[in-house]
Image (cartoon, rainbow, N blue to C red):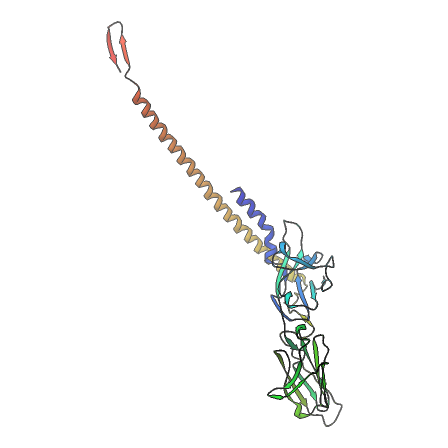
Length: 339
């Protein structure tokens, strides 16, 4: 019983680390070769503590990649903003083998207080994406499309085609370029090839796609009429793709929590209530277990006493049955009495 109570008491300090502390994105998908930023939001009372980023799902076996008190790698950096109560982790040029579980944590220190921690799964996919998949520009102007690809497709040919017309495909040559009077394509061989549509005409409006290997991404180009009077203005709208919106992907974690005393007092009250209730329930369970074990022990002792009494009574009967009758002589009367 003593061991159970001791074990339960050692778990109490770890409950806060499991219930609160950090918030980050559950899962992030990024295109291979891109940079990635992960924000981790923490509570106000953790502003002065060391923050860390490691790979793995268990603190004891988590390989540290970055810490706010020590620079461990050139490809992974960490920045803490105590005012906004968030620290960000940047991973540069991620590879497909970087996929896996990661953990951002606040080092609270010691066995008696668990670190605040949050986990995220990063999925790095080979393939391609487009920076702007919906473009609009006025007639007579030029528009540029950026198509990004993962490193494994650097040596592959790049295509720009009009959707629904395979014969319209334009392919880069050995040097990674193509150009005519209306289209220019250039591959920088580092992960991006750009397509420039020159001197747009109304007939250029429609759907296109860029491709490399077995991957392709669609793009819509809208051509606007030139205004009859006034200064020409150009409007460009952007819709970011799911895989890789740009060379730097920022994980969309929960919005930063408002830094107000009222909010913090409310959160503290809720957490204290949860902790008090959990501790009370744990003590109730321990009390019930202790009472049951005490009753069991008392019953065993009572049963043992009853068995001992029964055994003593049985042994006494056996002894008395073996004692011979006693004979007493009355010397005066010469009578003999047998008992």
